[in-house]
Length: 300
Ligand SMILES: *[C@@H]1O[C@H](CO)[C@@H](O)[C@H](O)[C@H]1NC(C)=O
Ligand SMILES: *[C@@H]1O[C@H](CO)[C@@H](O)[C@H](O)[C@H]1NC(C)=O
Ligand SMILES: *[C@@H]1O[C@H](CO)[C@@H](O)[C@H](O)[C@H]1NC(C)=O
Image (cartoon, rainbow, N blue to C red; front, side, top):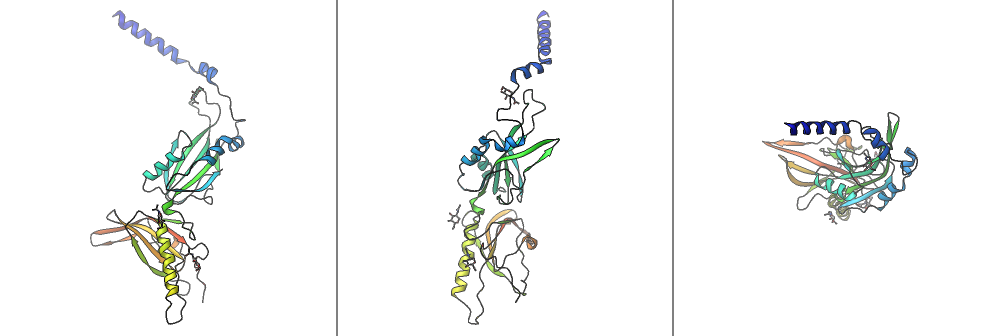
């Protein structure tokens, strides 16, 4: 009985000791802001952030699309994010590789307010975010420079972008336009002519937009080498849409559809079809235009 009472009073004592730890903790651990004044501009100028971004190695299977920007991406197909304990591009890439819907990622330092529930965080901190996207991340869509919340300026530093080389723009094409689960369903052009030039099914290797780019250029070369006897200028492939097809959810391979003219998201209305009991759908759809000649229709 005595033992129990002793144990209870020990517990009561422990509770008392824990009851008021705050002033002591602040006294011991109060941080000074080691990297200069705690402002958004000193955060942006922090050389540690730019060094981490500039020195990051590009993971294999990825292409570095921009380095050390003060903005994060607003790309297509948001796929969530994780918080990293270090600026670790390789671990961010591994997470992207593990997610079939991730084709690109953005890693950066985000200025975060001093935490209200931490004893000693009197300075802002950096949250290192790894954000996943289905569409390409480029300098052009790195437009999110932050915001002000409750008077605290959230800013972004050391922002790097990476895309899987499988969807990277091939030499002479791109950048890619992400079309999600939709394929191009092209109307006739401004002269009432069909711009569709046929398709290929590539199901002997993982998804790779470059192979479709090669098919597009090869078709142009073939058509130029084999003109019709009617004297009409041969059609050349200036645009392609490549995507994965699924039969009842099972991947059937990569399609590659060629066009003589570029088309935009507005006509990406083909989501697949049902044939008997089978449902055919589309995923990872990307469009690419010839970089020097997008094949814009000129009214005859
Ligand atoms: C508080 O300070 C201690 C000692 O410097 C440190 O170990 C701890 O990570 C800090 N906690 C927070 C939330 O910053
Ligand atoms: C882009 O189009 C131009 C003009 O038709 C053509 O000369 C060029 O070869 C095309 N580029 C590629 C990569 O096919
Ligand atoms: C994609 O295809 C191109 C052209 O065929 C090839 O050179 C490249 O190695 C392929 N990329 C991957 C990741 O397989």
